[in-house]
Length: 152
Image (tube, rainbow, N blue to C red; front, top):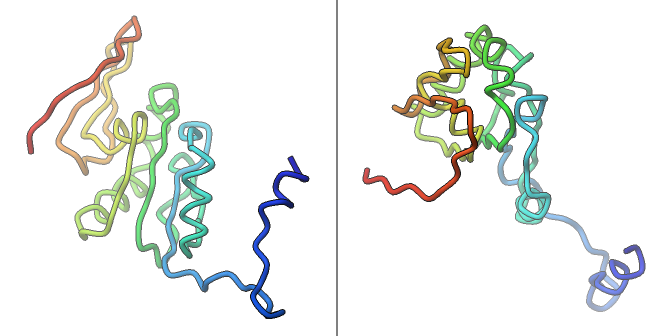
């Protein structure tokens, strides 16, 4: 892999040194036991476009990092950590306020579950989530994947 990467290295024209762009945005991304599924290429592309990626933990941090221009919630297992996510009311409030501010928030799968109003686990217990998106998630005993259509 190192040899392949070396073949693709960019050379600076006329001996000038290459430099990476100054970060144009600080983008926070949820990274802990509840949120860990990310496509490395997508994160790499954000860095190449000048973003500074800042990891944070919805499970343990009291709020979002300062100065973010956007937030990403990847996939994971929020249902396995629903009680702890619900107990972190300050983070849930920070996420809800951030989304309401109009700044970009991207979420997929488990991240979208967290952004919703609530998550009903397999035991039938309802856990309050962020409330940034007007949806409620209910876990099922069997995996049910498929395409969904929605109109906004």
